[in-house]
Amino acid sequence: MIKFIPEPRLLESPRGRHWPRPPAPAQPPRDPVPPTTADVVIVGAGPAGLAVASALWHHGVTDLVVLDREGRSCGRFFDRIDRLDQRVLRSPYEHHPGVEGFRDCELLDFARLHWGRLTPVERREIRMAQAGHRSVVPVDVFHAYTDHLAVTHHVRDKLWGASVTGVRPDGDGVAVHTTRSTVRARHVVLCLGEERRTAPERWWGGGPPPAAVSYWDEPPPGPVERQIVVGAGLTAAHLLAAALDGGREVHWVLREAREHYQCADVNSTFFRPEGRKRFDGVGWSERLDLTAEFRRASVMFEFRPLLERAEAEGRLVVHRGEAVKEVSTGITGTAVVQLESGRRVDADHAVLALGTIPSIGTGLLPAGLVGARDGWPDLDEATLSYRQAPAVSVVGAAAGMVLGPAARNIDGHRVATTRVAAAVAARLRGAALDLRVTADV
Ligand SMILES: Cc1cc2nc3c(=O)[nH]c(=O)nc-3n(C[C@H](O)[C@H](O)[C@H](O)COP(=O)(O)OP(=O)(O)OC[C@H]3O[C@@H](n4cnc5c(N)ncnc54)[C@H](O)[C@@H]3O)c2cc1C
Image (cartoon, rainbow, N blue to C red; front, side, top):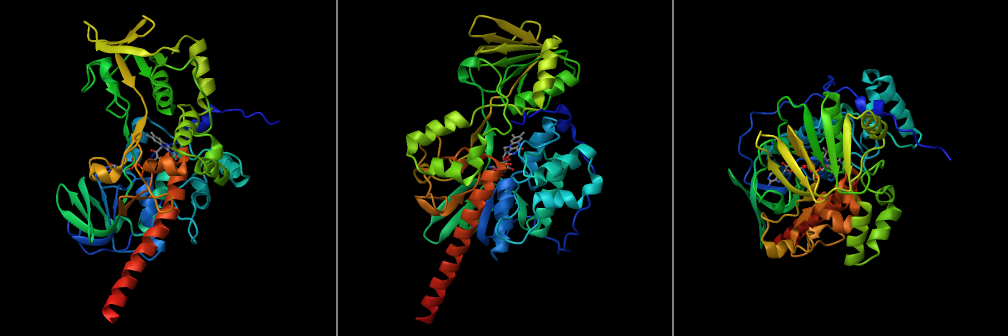
């Protein structure tokens, strides 16, 4: 048996390299407000929204409006990655938002086209991917690839910065309300991603964190000598690595009895058809159980030597099997984390990495249409549209109870996109056909 040997140097890809961009077609100056009508509105331009828009382009659906709070393709995704100083993706080369089933450039092809820009370590990872092994993708390559997709599938021309406040299906289609205007669409795809999980109210009484405490996606603190990181996943690992790199004394609080190292955050079978089939073939409660069992907080193998060495050298103190009871600010302005065991850890700063929660459309669609159950929406399994609102569908984490734990990863967005883009294109064609029949009569 080949033993997998993690190499921390795989985590060190450079960030911010220059990549040649495909020339964007010249566009006439554009109205800052999106058009008032469109065949399809996509809410959210992250990897999922980009995948859907690119696939729809291949299906010939070009009357499209993409709305995103950040106003940039994959803006929140890369902001989060950069906040953690993350240099490589966790997902391998075959997981990407490019289009399946049409002639298109895949992430691996794209990386090979830019061979000369890559380090020897990065080139070796490409060879690993070509040989069918797990591979590590530099964030730079992925970023340039998403730009490439956005330009070549005309997604940039269709993207407007706007915060969507309401999605209201009616007899003729769907009204999408933003803080600036309303767009009427025949179909809407929600690609909302996930929001950070906030701390339980009992930790400090709810609301923003106490002084000297922040969440992982908030601006980092000023100079810190001693830092606490709470959480057991990859986000926590990136925070730990950055803190250790900055020469801090670090305390890692994790509720689990021990840290869990794994290639992906989902058991890899769920990225394959047989894994999805396993999820498909069972009832609701079994799906909940499978999700809980197989999508658990874990850290990429490459971190293991790095964190174990730091612990052995006393630079990292790991508080295993310790649940947090309370978080507060000490008299001297330090962060104080009180543990259920009675132990207390204090430091200049504590950062909380408690995971994320899928955005399922609650707050945008009327609650009755979302049909939320256990935090998941009520979706048609074939089309991923809301059963109570067939003109609105989802791609991304919200499809987790249909597609399985991998729905929350880039590969799951690809599977959802294939299904949704085909269904939306067919639906639009069907509607056009109906109109023609009516006109003939
Ligand atoms: C730090 C980090 C690293 C990750 N690395 C990987 C990885 O390597 N591989 C992997 O497979 N997965 C990874 N993930 C999981 C990852 O989040 C998803 O795979 C991917 O970002 C999800 O894409 P998305 O488009 O669904 O969501 P997002 O990237 O979050 O995009 C959703 C977009 O919708 C916008 N939006 C939401 N609500 C509204 C609204 N009401 N109005 C307007 N716009 C709105 C948001 O602002 C956002 O821009 C990572 C997650 C994090 C946090």
